Image 1: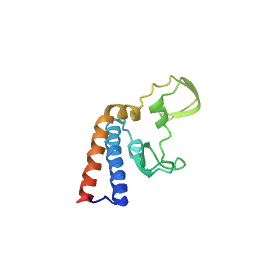
Image 2 (image 1 turned 120 degrees about the horizontal axis):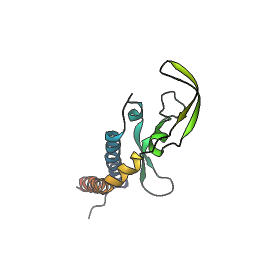
Image 3 (image 1 turned 45 degrees about the horizontal axis):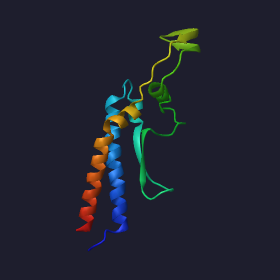
Length: 139
């Protein structure tokens, strides 16, 4: 019986992880509120080789350089919410106010919702992708 090469196994595992991440990312993109599109542009996925175990892991969410000017710092407020607070020295609608009472917002954790709704489908897709690649490498 022929054995599948380690490199082919790694490729299959990476591609299976990426196929799973794509499902979650696509769902998040369909749910994210869009005004300027900046938040949508920063929802990304990253597949990396694990250091502590054999295999790969995926990160999906608002990724990027947090120091860049266009990074959507406000994503955490949309996902986790924000309590009522006072904003000092704010300009809004062409007027300047000394302070404004913000009522806060309830968060909508799109990342967790996407995971909960799609985990079965994503696992099935990853399994099929992995099996297809291993069978292809085995032939």
